[in-house]
Length: 407
Image 1 (cartoon, rainbow, N blue to C red):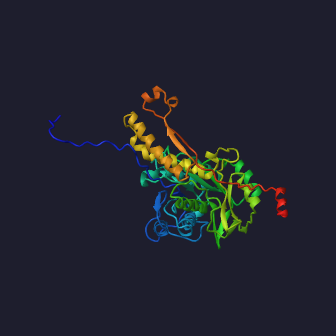
Image 2: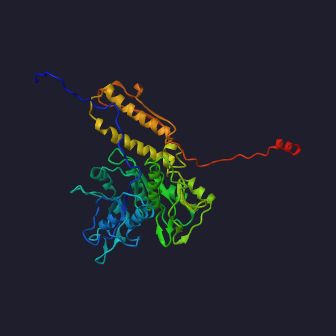
Image 3: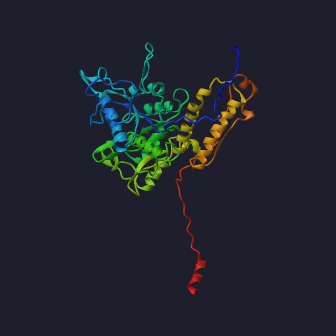
């Protein structure tokens, strides 16, 4: 140790930690694209795009959305709703997906979206690539979308499975569609149950929608609308996308207009299905329930905004304090995390983002042997507001006002 003589400054870590900013609604989209005019078509590679121009430069563009599903989503997200960014993964390989030696994107199937990991090369394809997004871009996906493919139950279930645990720690929402083969709205709930579309990290959409002569999967519109609602709410996903204006002109079921009344749309909502409704103020998304409803009525799981807030808050906590992993487990460390989080939760409460919240460390949840082994548990209590799904006005005839007739 050197001999000291004088005045020397030392620094200690700040006792409060600012939260990491986590975008709540960035979608990761799986599908097919035609290929750019110049350059190669990215295949099974996550590509981050901030505009329609960037998307076209990377993937090309074609108006035939039945063949090229990524073009549909890019139009909805960038053009119709003016949102950005989005992460696109094209699974169409012209060298593989072809008919009679002609490249054919309609050959792409649900199993290409589901993907897997090659035993020899360990290369990932399809949904397995979700785990590469954060290492590559430092972005946590907010929603997983696969228009044109998520109406296959195997794809939908795989999407929700991935959404519930990304990179082993993060959470998102899978937005899936009901296939057009279900031609009656009254048959949608039985289809949903029969195909196990009942996960809390899943949002079920029915039917397709249209804007002029363009037909969209409702999942494309929902992902873009959620991004817009979150943007208007300072990037915090505590508001429901339900009853928010959509950029559409109608519902579409197998090429026919589907006109749902309020009672019919509510029937779908009551079975954990969201739809589009033209009722008051134009076309709006209608429904705030995740796919787990009605079998699971826990507000944390069954309301879309509450489930998404829990996802977002969990993801933010992970990224904010990940740098504290492997620090000495001291009282100062615990106090730093608790003080920082309580300030954050109090801020949410003051802005009515939540009704209230606090974080504690309970001795009953932290046995000595766990603390000796470097494992510590915090307990966060918080109450994001449920959407006011039903506002009731009780009317009563009051005969006492008859006396006013006599002055």
